[in-house]
Structures are given as structure tokens and as C-alpha cells.
Image 1 (cartoon, rainbow, N blue to C red):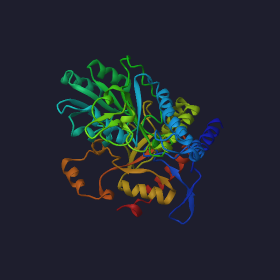
Image 2: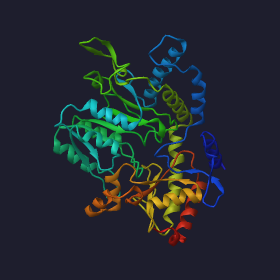
Image 3: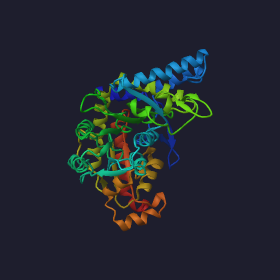
Image 4: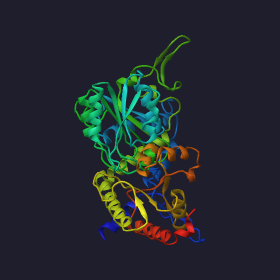
Length: 437
């Protein structure tokens, strides 16, 4: 009864969970969202904040009107809220607002790398956004993963020793968007710092699901940079964040130049503004910032430890339930593991991933993701594709390419929803001949 009441309470915090959608038989069914790793629905508190703020909306750092001052104060005070949320030192660290994690990682690659010969260590489990931006700017090497897809700490150590102090940054996912595996970012930070490197954490997946402490600047486990998106933490209104030290952004030119980035401009010179303003060109997304502020307050109210507990219960139940089904393949570890988010990649044997996703949506109103989830090298390791198969995939359309189906849970998902999923998958397998391409 306690668990049911908790689920009900958390579901009441989210917009749109009672939405009914049409199914293939013409009837409407309750929409079930198992695609939270892509994006999350908004908190009701976020929508309330936006509606309350909208009448006061105005330009940020531009005018002297009351509304402009109000908007500017909200914009800047949210920076402090964010730093406190991560226990970051406000004297030495800054918050830079961007559109999303992808833009944030691209900005870091542009601002932090000024030597083509320097080395950045990424990993074989990264989202494309924490791989591709580095490739054209420096030498990138990849820390390997084991047969289950978990990061090989021993290989990180090996590569740090091999480059012998030449690694400038270790840029790593806080958690995989394919398997949900959580990396020990504090151990990685300690290893990087012992070789005079800095750590960058792609926090897109981890931030909404677990408490992250950036730790004091002088702590060997300090997280130097973290990047994340509000749209994965129940505030989908186009804002992302970089947290990092101020000093590197004080040097050189910003990649986007224009309004808000300068102190003085003549026909012959430019004096750039101080960070973070130097990095935030143009009119700012104050609505997105207001949404993020409300989301942080709501997450704090629930408690990140409580969110972790609820989501692990759902993950454990889902893994146990799916593992009993003959005819599906679950990738990675099939036993419940503590250091893992609520993400499960799988396929129904004999049915293409895109077809499975379509059937789940059309027949049961279940939303999942299918494909390679912007992590093609990682997914290919699980699928064990040969070089010839990889080459063949290059010429195929999305609904023909190799891939997986991904389930990803939020704090509001329930065991009852898992039961509907399991029932639907069993039905698909029993009627496989009907669905096979």
C-alpha cells in the first residue's frame, strides 16, 4: 500500500500521465512512456512556474524596466541554485547556459582545446555528443568496455600511463544512455588528476536520477566540468548547463559573438565580457531557466536518494519480468545491478527493432526508443556486427538498420506499466508470424 501511494503521489507531480492515445483496434489506451532517457515530460510545478513568470517575462541584462530587472534577477539567481544543487564552489565555478548537453560539449571542445597534439580520452560507451566534437580538434583515444558493456577502469589506467601526462581531459558519461550503467566518476576523477588531467562528465543521463556532488576544487575526486540538459529532468524548455571553472573561459574568443558577449567594441578592438556572459550570446532563454529552477526545487523536495530508490525498484522488477520471457534478448547484464539506471536495451528475436517499437506504440500505447540511440559504436559491440554488416548498414534506411529497442524509466513509472509491457511482448511473440518482415 505504501509503494502504491508513493507511485500515485509521484505520478501526480507530472503533466500528461493520464493521456489516452488511439490504438490499432480503434480504442483509446493509457499512454505509457518508457522513453525517459530521450526526454521527460514536465513537472506540474514547472508548468506552474512558467505560467506565474510569463506576465513578468522581459529581456535579460538589457533594460531598466521592472520586468527586465525581475527577469535578470531570476536568470542570475538560478546560477546559484544550480551550483548549490551540485555542491559546487561558487567562488571558483560558473554556470553557463546553453541549449542542451550537445551544445555544451561542443562549446567545451571549442574553448578547452587549443593544441591539435593534445590527447583527450573518451570511451567506447559514449553518446556521439561526447565523441564527435573532440575528433577534429585533438587526438582522441577511447577507453574500452568489457563484454557486458561496462567501462574498463583497468584500460583507463593503462591509457593514462601510456600517454604519461599528455592527456589533457578525460571526458566520460556519468551513465550510459544505452545500458544505464553508471560510471564511478569520482574514481575516474582521482585517476585523471593523478596524471595531471581534468575530468569532464556528460551528465545528461545521470543528473536526473542520482545525487552528484562535484566536491571541493582541492579534492582529488573533484569533478572539473559537468554538462547536462533540463529536458531530461522534467523541464523540457530548451535549456542546458555547463558547470566549470571560470578561468578557461576568460581566455580567448567565444565561438558565438554578438549581443551580451562584450564590454567594449570599437572599429578596431573588442573587449570581451567576463564569463559566463561572454559565452551566452544573444537573447537568453529565460523561460527555460525558470523551468529548470522549478525542476531543481521539485527534485530537491522529493530527494535524489528517494528517486534512486524508486527507479531501482522499477528496474529490478522490469529485469526480472523480462528475463522470464523466452524469445527476447536483453543486452548487457540481465541481473539487477546497483550501479545502473533504469534503462534496458532488448530485441524480440526475429522481429526488427523498429517494428517492435511500432507495435508497442500502436497496439498498447507504449512509447520506447529504437535504433542505436546516438551511440552507434557502443551498440554495435552488443550486436556483434561484422565489418561487412557495418558497411551494409551505411546504405540502409533507419527502419532497416541494425539496432535495439530501449526501455528507460522515470520516477513516475509503475510496476503495473511493466506488467502491460510484458503482456504485450508475450502477445507479440505468440503472434510472431503476423509481425515478421
